Length: 377
Image 1 (tube, helix red, strand yellow):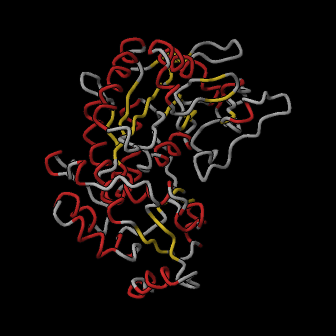
Image 2 (cartoon, rainbow, N blue to C red):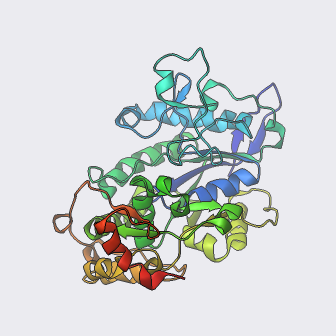
Image 3 (spheres, rainbow, N blue to C red):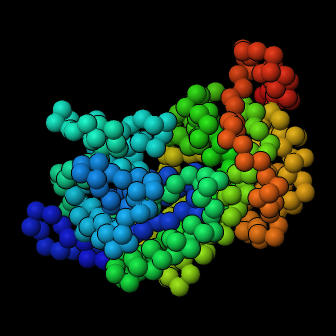
């Protein structure tokens, strides 16, 4: 099914796919699917569901969630109807502007911006895109905003609220095609969260979750020291996020269920299946530019891996994923096979620290670097 996407500038209406991507949670490698769409002339909006506040975009927040359901659905309708005008436009919240990386890459507000507009995510869509490449637009994709799965936002209750939204979207915009994006290995997913949200990826580019191929080839070796209890907590939350993804789409048709590991194992094949399911033109054969930067085997990255493994050991479903040294698919862990919240540390302390084993800054880092000796190439 296709949604009629209206072209700006008085052009005739054309039927193009309208795609809504829902992730199990943040830091799941979803930039991979977003950049895949964007590379094939799909006007792709990353972490954006069409809600504008003046000329700024609304990112996940209590205010966004409190918007009337009908208003959120209408904002999404407008995004699909006019989003082709943003194809290739700079400064939009999309897959290729880098605005989600280290808090940088936002388009600069112009001199006439109000004080409130200077303290927000400036957004080309919300101030009107030029539409210079609309004719070549193959469709519009929105990768839904996803707040970091903080301890105060339990995955399953949040999924039930999302289900009401997706049912409303499906009823009001029946041709929208839903795509779910999941990451099967929740241990690696959790470490991606810890690296990004605790500054490691910004401290050292080599610890970013993904990079373009040229940058990845030149990246130096780096290591992490991870707080074991925090790591287990986040792996559990990511596991619950996988269960929540199914809850979010109860009673709603999903056009394609994508998994990060499928794209790792066979990017070309997974892309062909995805595009075929959505009615997009066949993808052009091209070498993937976005690659995973850190090692697949976490024991090659985490200097205190043995300490982490000991904490994961009572939970075999999580432990198997922690020890996995290659891209592979895992079934979702049942809730009964996960630690109960009361057994987890909910410390807000840093979860992952960069270990500079070339020049340790102090005794604590020096102790941690002893664990990195076995990892040296």
